[in-house]
Length: 345
Image 1 (cartoon, helix red, strand yellow):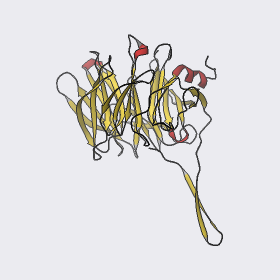
Image 2 (cartoon, rainbow, N blue to C red; image 1 turned 90 degrees about the horizontal axis):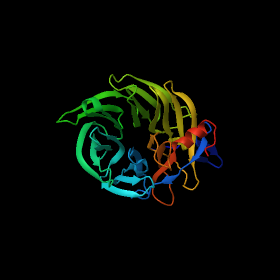
Image 3 (tube, one colour; image 1 turned 30 degrees about the horizontal axis):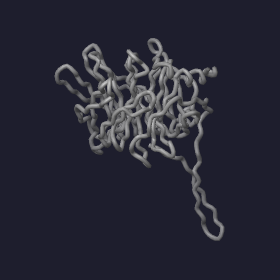
Image 4 (cartoon, one colour; image 1 turned 135 degrees about the vertical axis):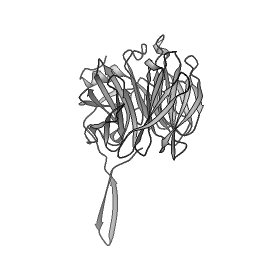
């Protein structure tokens, strides 16, 4: 969702003249990084269509990893790390996406389905790791609300997955899906006061992070639903809307939490576990275009071959003229180096 703050004023000369002017809100300064690659544009043109990416890492050949991205007007795309389209699964209304690789090697993709505005659903699909083809498998009813945010984790011990759904009405649902045999249970985990979207799960600390677009970032216990606001929309680190969230885990509970500060085209970075502000970055135009109005983001800090040797950050680009929206690919080590004040070679 994209909102612009504004101010209206009135002046009287030969009557009352009303005028409105957009007043952009800019947060704290941000360092600049550049994308190394970009995907081909999504198929829907002249609309806000591309939204959220997910990364599958090919452990045997990291440079052959895949990116799944949503076109919320059309379906799911699969790209390679050069940004070429490998496949497309048509399904209008899919908003956000996540994926997990299961112990048996199968890659399960889950997308929030907003085609029913009254009831949130999750569309499941499998990803063929060789061809990049997506095959739809099951559509799960979650609960009331228009489907919006989604994230999930695999639980290896009992061969199940946990799916978090965050509809627009602020109800946060937890769905536990048993993969061996039949088993599906959904419950309300918690609620947030206004519209959420971005989410990510930290399995190390059993913490769910939810972005409430106009308020900030919540840290939520994945079992009890207890929550606290750990980063607020302050027009310094975060400028509304708060959109995509991603994690860069280090050790038992350290690392970074990254959020799309959509209102001023930046990304806010917080140090875990205390959520201390580290800094902000923007993706500027270089050999690949700049990035603005980002919805979804994704991050994997492992190596992805020579082009992304120490981590891959993927961001949706909401303004990509003259073409349709797409996704930009950035080296994570470049981002960290710039935040720490060391130019990347």
